[in-house]
Length: 66
Image (cartoon, rainbow, N blue to C red; front, side, top):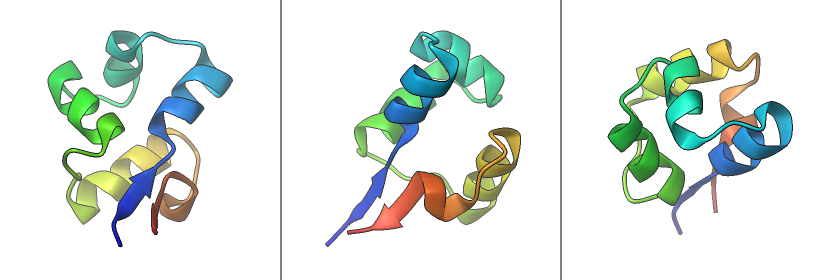
């Protein structure tokens, strides 16, 4: 069991942006974005809420427990 995310899917389908541009959109460092997108690390619950708000989504639309 683990936490999965749709960051790459959202980035590509809804924004058609490179990771660097998308990281800037959600106001995080691009290296941090890469580890989140790959699932190697998770943001804090506060960051999850902030990112969801910036993308006009619910947290569970981006991250979910598998």
